[in-house]
Length: 333
Image 1 (tube, rainbow, N blue to C red):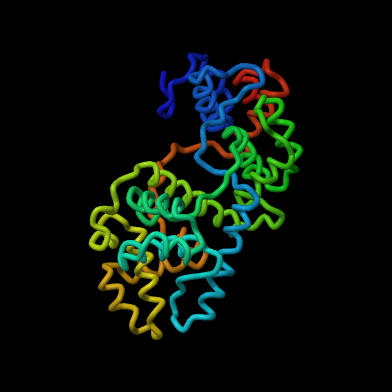
Image 2 (tube, rainbow, N blue to C red):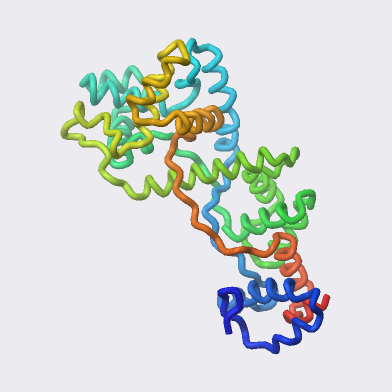
């Protein structure tokens, strides 16, 4: 039997429909129970929490992104242009400038390495990353915490369902479910990485959702490792906008940062093949995320209609408190 596209466990369905008010609720619960049954984890003290691509930042990574908007605004204030570009303490600009000198100006590796304060070995690594990943390969490598993906999803689920719930509640449930590596410090860090900090503002939640999307997109594009530039023909292939879209946007922002008046923006956009609407989207993202805001976003797959976070959390809690509960008993309660 199939219900809303999900195969379900054969049951006496009339049990769930005796009370018309419970029809919708029973339908939703049966959908999630069917998934649990298919995954063969409908056992005491277990629950299905799927894989997530989200990343839990270390403290240094989180502070790195927190400082970017201030640095971009500071660069804009000190610039004579209406468009910001290079800002302080961003490793990308030093790496990009080093390769520009190496490939376009044909400076020696030794002189480039010495002037930028990097080793020749590091310069070779940057060059290889640039060849395979383009400008994306020059973005700084960030540090993340390796935690159980189910733990991260559980923490986010609880905050979505009950924004003011204490972290201890997530810790107790994670321990009951047997998720490894959970402690209050990790749980609070996960909350901050998804915008559920002390202020609990919707703006912060949207900020971190977009940041997670950017980082996931960058990671997936790096993994493809296509030949973006040709090391055998450095001067001619340094600029390759057809393949390296991030480089195109970097060069666009660089060109716009050199013009003093707004009315000169449109001719530059035409030269780079960027529409005004698209440019303002990129500019707004640049103001918030810096060079990371220019990364191509990978389209996120659509998900089926889900039950509410509160109902999902209630099912977990009831199942943990009484493993003998069946679907009909949950609905009656």
